Length: 186
Image 1: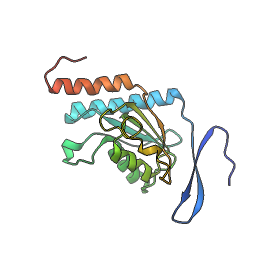
Image 2: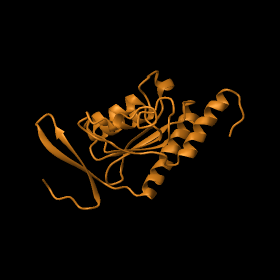
Image 3: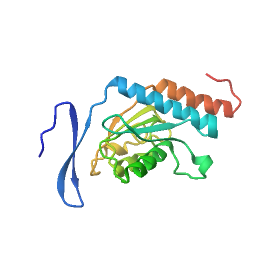
């Protein structure tokens, strides 16, 4: 096993293709990093609403060095694709950019707690960490309704941090739906 600096977090897993234990590491992001990237995701969410009249959810995937690998916003309506959630769009773009379906050591920032589909896509892609804004009391799969990422049966663990700029993210979602229903904004 290789030595890892103290500033790194570790997530051990078994690579089932070759049966060997692997160590995946990613630098610990600071709270300021989380805020900055969540603000970026919120800007993408704004584009979803403004450009495509989609539910305002944005996502950005960054590598361990803080470089953007992929970003996106909800595109379900525009692409007639039920799987085109912001998280999936960002991960697809990252995979294409890297030429790899594995997104090891990355952090996904998303304005709304991921659903079951997006959570499991993160597990399959080997995303190291997800940071979300608002909780989703109807379909959240990172702890509020379901807790798929904590299931010990998975061969990969995704670290979860929720509530970063959650009030702002939640307010944007609430106002989107209130506007659609002709109700006053909050």
